[in-house]
Image (cartoon, rainbow, N blue to C red):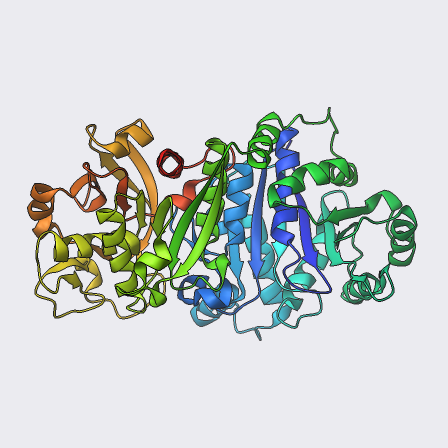
Amino acid sequence: MTDVKYVFVTGGVTSSLGKGIISSSLAKLLQARGYSVTIQKLDPYINVDPGTLNPYEHGECYVTLDGAETDLDLGHYERFLNVPTSQANNVTTGRIYQSVINKERKGDYLGKTVQVIPHITDEIKRRIKLVSSGNKFDIVITEIGGTVGDIESLPYIESVRQLRWELGSHNCMVIHLTLVPYLSASGELKTKPTQHSVKVLLETGIQPDILVLRTERKLTEDIKRKVALFCNVEENAVIESVDVSTIYEVPLKMLEEKLDQTVLRKLALPIEDEPPLTDWREFLGKLKNPKYSIRVGLIGKYVELPDAYKSIAESFIHSGAMNECEVNVEYIHSEEITEKNINQLLEGLDGILIAPGFGSRGIEGKISTAKYARENNIPFFGICLGMQCAVVEFARNVLKFEGANSTEINHKTKYPVIDLMEEQKSVIDKGGTMRLGGYKCLISQNSRVYQSYGRTEVVERHRHRYEFNDKFIDDFKNNGMVPVGINPESNLVEIVEIPDHKWFIGVQFHPEYNSTVVKPHPLFVDFIKACVAK
């Protein structure tokens, strides 16, 4: 198969309808049918990437293996497809304009007036096609962020219109996701918002090929027929997406609605036998029928918005299903934790995870939590800043390094057990300057971590500036907190553990980025196993 087919997913009526989940579910079904598929996200904000965005603004910043800071939807893509994404899978308006302006400054446009059309739209089309260059993808699914009608997304919509004209209807199609709200006062599902949304899309020159209707109540055939008639789509191209208890049910719902078959038919691609999705169904069976139930405390400073810890929450679901266990995550704000109330807040937890983060806010609550888990023999998992807090706590209370700290929090500390990486000390800019992406880690064979992974070399993803200060490595090793994972190139400490503890592991990297439905991350699986055993 030589020609790449393009599927665009747009949204209407309201934001947060789940374009990323629909895109991921469709990709999963097409992949199960033997097609090579990738997904990309076009984000309409002017930030170059979400790396400098507050999690309250945009949720989690997801990091790819090649070091791109991206939208959290890329996490869904990887979790569903079990295929890594890259820099090319997330495009922002900021990146598009930056590229065009750089070309203009170099004189690439030969003195022409640089305009949204054709220069910005040409760059968008180039980026859309870039994700498939060098890869033999049969189908590229592109999710367009925002809602149709937004000023910010107009250049993307125009680029899609141009591509449809250039590539032809059998090579390029549009799925429009909208809402059919239920009005309890009248007891009716209302299609008018969908009709208006499609009208806005038509005004941009795009006729959607498929409509996916988000709804909390099942749609009648009459409603589907009405939407098809008023929106000028085929009846079998009106797809119901009813609310479900878990996002992992959506692929099976879309399979029932024949979304994948409709897409393949419109792209003039062969439709083979229906995929069995055996692994997926087995995962869902375990997820919905757990044998055990545990309470795990997630300690962070953005807990008001659970999307700030999206990949960790999904990793708990994957590893919980693997252990046939329901993981009830209790989000606890680190700023609220004090020496006086810590017993009350953390009592009864089967496990504790200290989440990643930046800055000093809530740091002492995290350090107190690490102490509580260590002294009470509660399974403990520290990720990135969570690992650093465990190191600081151990230095203060076991090594008796009074005032030990990270130089991120106190640059004058006498015991900088966590310090800025040497190459970062002269950096002023915040964007894209951290240690990002995949790095190797060599694991000691006589460690709990080795039992989890079952191998001595792994590659994990990073997003940080500060590191374990190896000047103190012997102090920790001789007193019971052992560095068991080391980066072979830089000799930086990647993993620490306390062998005498039930399960106490801190990692400098982000294992949650590598957890998928088919392959839950081994550290999360082992952590949940330890929590169940407790």
